[in-house]
Length: 191
Image 1 (spheres, helix red, strand yellow):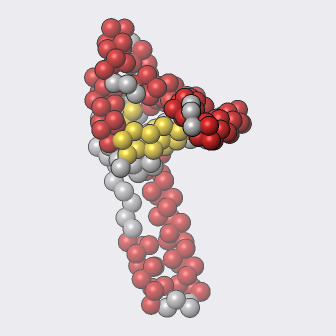
Image 2 (image 1 turned 120 degrees about the vertical axis):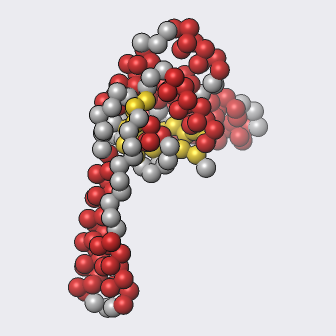
Image 3 (image 1 turned 180 degrees about the vertical axis):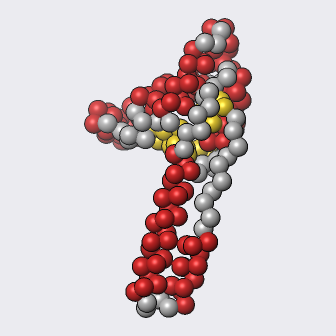
């Protein structure tokens, strides 16, 4: 289990080309039997719109972000009530041939989906990234504003503390680079 994170605007053309080229270098390295690690590192460097943490890594990142004042702490918003969808789905199961039941289930599903997306993209306005958005992989959107506030807090931290974080957590520097990229490209999704 882990956290897959995607830049909201997706990869741009330059990244797509760089990733294709990196995949080709990886394929060649595998065929040669040498340079595979370097080719993987090149692929990682080319991929700017995706980042992954395992459970431990995300926990460490959250801990450091909290220490740097990069997080805000609010209660997770309530998820929408699924009763309308559940009822419409049950009616469709009782009468699968009913066009009215099928349409009612589709409308209810669309409403529920839209309501869930509204919860996922909500920016509660705290002074940083909402902590709860980094505690599950529910397709939360970290808004550019949230990320900017977090990066500003980090930039204000003592340089010795920032250097220590890079030394102590191997992924910290690449995580900060990814946040910077995501802030400029519509935010990121935590899936």
